[in-house]
View 1 (spheres, rainbow, N blue to C red):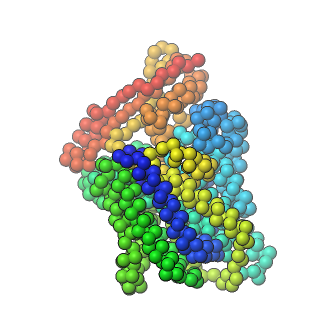
View 2: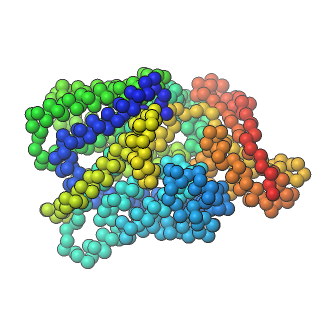
Length: 585
């Protein structure tokens, strides 16, 4: 389901989307006692602590990897001045110190403070302060320039939840100090609701992303093939390997990854059922059980309607459409098949909803993105985020926790409930399909403002609805005083040879070369190149931006023609189109 869809009945899309939110709220109201027990329980702090360490270390690596282009991205001597960045981006991200203080020296001080906060977050020193400082500084960087962004909202999403959690209660300097000050105190427990929010975040992170992938490359299974051979995302030249193995290995990888994303709600259902068995909550009365069945029927029917009208007609028969229809039907008929499902032998249940299967699939999926593909440091956090599904019984034993956990005061429970409700409703509002009528724009404006401030929407719809076989690249040409033309790549300073730096370089090149996204950057990037080459001899008279477009051979053609012939035809089909030219002062 994607907001880019153009359904035949726009009004039905928006009504069904908000009906979905209302029905979920009604289900929560019916189960309010169980939901309160789930939300305000105490738990082992170690899973959240492990995620804190991974988040801080990976964010620090991301920041240091960009060191050669800090000035280009965030200073007034780079792509945009602070005033230009404010005019372009402040509507969505209004807060950034770098709008007003953007000299190269100010940028280095800003980034230096962030390096310190990331390090403190990783080792767990003044952890809560470090988490909030790191989040605020990262949001300021993302607000200053969007030309290189791609997946960084994974960092902001989990940083927001870590800042809310007591993530320094284990595996931290803070915990070590507390343990040595009070050696007789048993290991602490922490409130579980931040990790519960992290687990629910998996729905937009994976499922909504999967529902948006309804294009032809996902249906044919060629997406992984095109990504492997894309200069920005692939691990390097693997043409010979693809030619020798044929198209089917990458097709099975494409369909397997897509199916995993679409079936992630099953592991969340399994986790909820596992937690429910540990809570002592009275069951529903007979009238409320009937209300519950009616809500499930309405919710399932609404999901079917959303799948039919929220996806474009060309998506009929694709995996997202099929999963939406089948999932809606299963939810609507749940009262009929649940009694039978409860009779499934206990030893089989972990293979359906258990974490041993789904966490393994998650690690395989995200590990491939991190170690094989070239998508950025955020994929490492996507991999490490699997730890949120690991409960204390899966970790090494430790001393028992306090027998009685503290209960939040009523005012605190209400504040936490309001914050969580705002977060979940906001994410649902930006995730569900929309035709953007006036009433829905007005209704969702504060929700979208909240999500924009925290950058925690986590719906990046990567490679959706399809992946194009066309590769777009940017070439910057310098025209000197003698009329000679010299190509200088993208005109950027050289980045380190790590593949994660290459990811950012290629993202910048591809985004500026894109006619839809890059037009706003053409003049600014040409001006930057003029400044960079101002002192060379002979003098640079003008800068020209050129877009190169080259098709990726289809997998069948690569096998049939062979690597050399297929690549020769690829180069023959390359097109060159001047985008913009600017005279240098």
